[in-house]
Image (cartoon, rainbow, N blue to C red; front, top):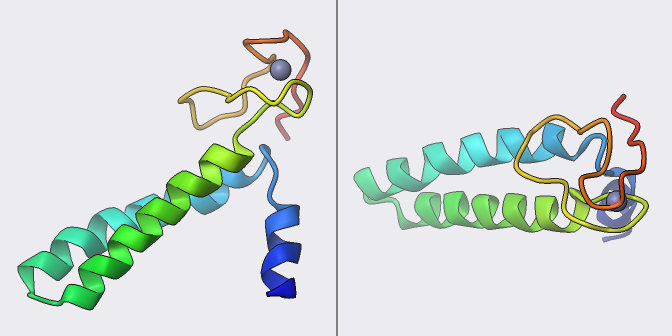
Length: 90
Ligand SMILES: [Zn+2]
């Protein structure tokens, strides 16, 4: 669990899309594939990955200054829409 915590702490608004985008792709693929192949574990895994990706982006895709959500774009905006402070994209 400590390793997961360490990894979780390394994820910031700058790199969270590197985790969530592949997770969403995998979940979107596994969920219907599991249903079509009557593999309950596969669709459940797909659903779990999707939920994890949503939870991850919900907790990490935030402005470091004011904590507001950064919107639907996958790229880090140059400035926060809410507090106007500069965001460091790379
Ligand atoms: Zn902000």
